[in-house]
Length: 150
Length: 158
Image (cartoon, rainbow over all chains, first blue to last red; front, top):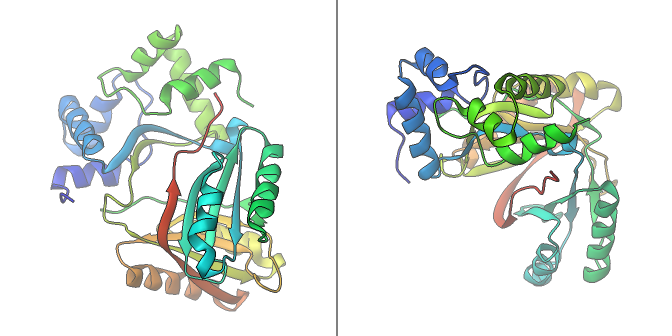
């Protein structure tokens, strides 16, 4: 992994939100960082090409777009872990799946265009694996002011 | 709710904005809209929360944030609105949600995701949360991810 240079670091730290909705937004955002329009565009292109940024643009809130998302967890016996992971991951609705160090050791996110599909996927996984699947839908979301500091 | 034009904006920007001097004009041309309509809609979608923010979307792993700790807290139902708002406001918390308990196995109802460069860094941030929350939390744990079993983008219907 290539370390970020000071300009890249300043760009990542300053531009995780608040990108201007103006005619020349890269010029306006660059001015605050002491960079020209072209320098900022090149810097962002380099960070995307290098994989340090996934992309540059709007971060859409999937649920507000009409899609449904639900976190779910399972306690999988260690000797069945890989087999169960394969069964779970085979569902295209599984967006992320993580192993975590807890009795509930498999945590995945089910994502679908309609809410009803979520319950069906969870029921299918319980049936295919013979294990309980705990649905952990968010009942409230708290505002986060997060940004990565690099 | 989003209308048909909003949905076309989603589809056109899901992979990011064009890295050109006038990205909103390029987007407008692509969609057959006026540039001011594009920026006006983006502004409205930001206010409504359909867009969380516009800017650099970091790849945590590539930036060295390889430790990912899911801190989970057992908070009295009466306190959760206040505590959740305060925990979410911490700079290092990336997601903060209330979720149902699954007793007796799972007593936790507040989830706060913490990213760090190392597990120790995550643990010390979780200790900061514990200090902030105080006795309002009856118990907490941090679950580290030990393996990514699958990671794809969310499927956004557009």
